[in-house]
Image 1 (cartoon, rainbow, N blue to C red):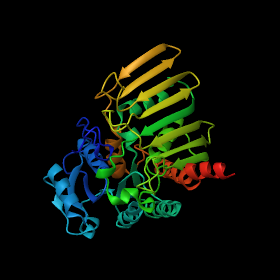
Image 2: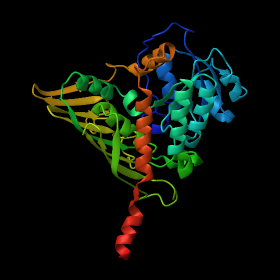
Image 3: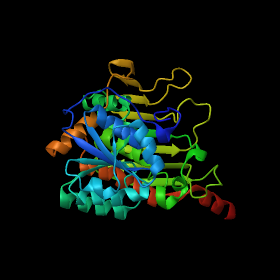
Image 4: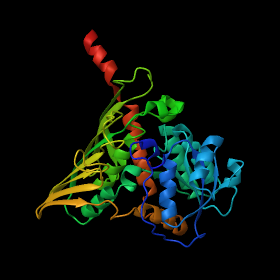
Length: 368
């Protein structure tokens, strides 16, 4: 079921309807339905006043499911029909991860902006080609880093940091556990060349949050590792990964991502973020307050004024989508700068590329 809280692949948050444009003023279409995040992407755009016109995917089953959710959408016969449609300003897509960059290039070549699910790339070569294309065409290549953009507690944490609630950010620690649900996953999900690896994939969320909260504009991966602890039937799957990063402003980051959410947890993952500032700390319990409340979006703040708990569910909204629409119309960068979107991808790709494989290292210790 779309929006199901226990299924991360099909988790699609629903927020307030806060239109920034009139009906029909901002038209978008969809190409690529391989990941359920496309539903969250569409929700955000529609709530901000966008008009969904058409959809294309070569798999009729995926199109049928999408049409059930959006019954007024037009079914395009070919990708080119959407690319050539002069009314469409933005194309959103959630193709197989390794195919997202190529679609983005085609979209930008047709004078349209692109909004893709994370991870936006599986190789550094794809990233550099997209950087060059975005610069040459002036088109946007935006990314759905949903674990910040579609989480109200994370949005509010950013506001608190901007207002100086904890002073300069020194470190961000992120944990991103996910439920595997292996039987419900498509074959490409277990093919390393197609999904890109765990640090490239769900690790990109963590990198993006660090860059945003710390205000960094550059960084270096100091250490990273990946492993397959419990899924021998899927040898190309990495079910664990972590990394350490230092930013150009001196802030540091450690994050851990995994596919080990236990069956008894009522949500797909107990995602948390810990932010250390010079004058205070923030903790985010994004999706659940485990064993106490099924409500996520719990924020805990401690600073010179005292201790504070904020239940933010339904109180903050998701401003990124309205800002993105206005950015497309006005050619501004309020929602997210292009360089920020690319830098988050770059660091996650580098973390993936240089990662130590844990089981191989452990075996070498045994053999030595």
